[in-house]
Image (cartoon, rainbow, N blue to C red):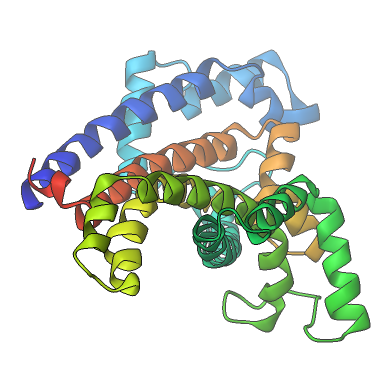
Length: 309
């Protein structure tokens, strides 16, 4: 296991360098002129040329990329073009943390409810429970967020008065309940379908029949042989969930007034704030690489065949 994990760790910096290169390439040669955006109504060709020299935009591409990579390694991703005097890290840092907390809560709801329900549906195949859970999952998945969010507010906050709805207090505050439910509902449906299909596939394997014929208790067979093997495809989906922690949930954040990264990302696209867009793209790509590394390591903990490679 240690050798496998170290091998994966050695490839991670190489992947991150490739990711940073293509992100910087797209940000450099993408549409729009950052100097023109920064100067606004004060734009003149002479002033723009002086600003390009001061920012190093007239340097060759390898020089610009090397400077960008060196700053990125020190945690400096530049200065926002829209918010003058604000560096990108201090601008997006608190909003990324807020969006990550929201998505963690949504992932807990999706995985915590979807996986057991999918396993239960597979174990009840041939009864009315199985199709009922599948149909219910499809209905939940088809509901748009802009419908489930206000509906959750109306039912649980207005009519029942169970939880507050205004403001944001973090992951361990009661106000996270409704946003987490709204974010996690589509994921519940996904996990139900995947866990059911994976469990049915495992139940049909010969080693499950062998374990039962040896007289093992049903709980031991379900946990040690069925659930652990059925979770392998689910972990892959969890990897994408981890990668999307910092992506923000724009509609949910707008509905519940959560100061996350979704609205900032949208405004940055419209205002062509390239340092912010580049930073968010780079962080998203880095989180995907790190998520794949984490999932590969988790695979070794669940499947002993991988540890022996």
